[in-house]
Length: 281
Ligand SMILES: O=C(O)c1cc(=O)[nH]c(=O)n1[C@@H]1O[C@H](COP(=O)(O)O)[C@@H](O)[C@H]1O
Image (cartoon, rainbow, N blue to C red):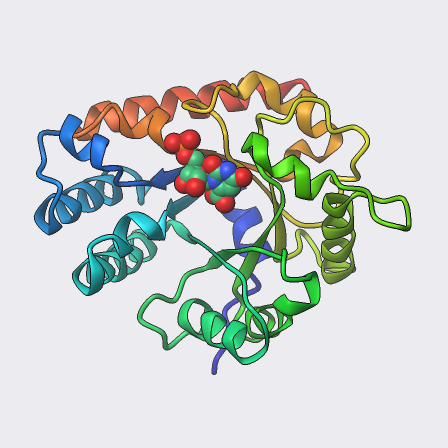
């Protein structure tokens, strides 16, 4: 395997060159309908192709949500493969949002599916769930290191239900979410300019000053737009870690399609607001 430059370094450069915005590729059935497309494989293909065409040459990161493709079975996965490959060829980094989490050899197989350079769905990074225990992710950590890919570990998710697990206090007094961030800080130790092992931390969560978000890696921040957070919330939520934040917007951009220039306009408005919010930090 000839490894890529580590994901963290590639991401930092892309954020510097293109700004930090991550646009989601989330082909909800309702969005397909709003775009005048059928809820079928042709509609899925047109939707994804349009988002890639509109965004991949300008945003730092595209994040396809695997579930919306898996819904269509093997033909949906074929569309996902093409979307990932075309987005990467056009210069975007692809974070595969599949939220995988398993144990041992099964986790290793999930890692092979998304993080091995020869895999049809190879992506620059993968979202993973650590709730079978952080150590269960070690096959994915190892393969990501080998291939130059990255991970985004669900630490403090944007949904209100996440708190019952992630804010739970462990016997050592730390919350479960803080424990995940500490594991990631250890993975990223010494990595410059940015580690490859990121956390998912919702932009919807309000004041997170009790958490140490400076863990040396990127922070994927979903929740802007449809879930109610705004770019102006970012400095308050993330404090000094805000320069490592990759803010994700999915429906907030996608609802402007199918017109390519309208999609680009919406993404530019978010990018400008993000830039303004970060300017004073
Ligand atoms: O891992 C994710 O991307 C994710 C984590 C999280 O805590 N919350 C969250 O909304 N997401 C994803 O981020 C996207 C948010 O979409 P919008 O709410 O439409 O902007 C969806 O693809 C979600 O699955």
